[in-house]
Image (cartoon, rainbow, N blue to C red; front, side):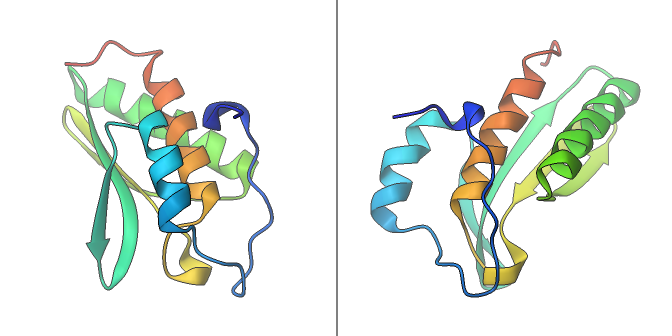
Length: 117
């Protein structure tokens, strides 16, 4: 199986299927630090990254934003002093899609560039 971080997002529209429980079970081990949470009635992938200061957190946020823009798939990003909360889900289907898992893995790769707490 190809690693998530090496894959590209696929076009997704409102009629695209949500990821299945079987697919989640297969893919989740590649992003073990991400939680699957329900917010506003939708499943989301969520992770908090910790940093030593605000500027490092902001730089991380901008790098994740650049990756998201290139992929055409955008997360919720909450940047605070010393931490960034990242949430991935597919708005058009109101839940999780393979793209969310791909981008979570890519976000982890970005984080590897930083020394975190």
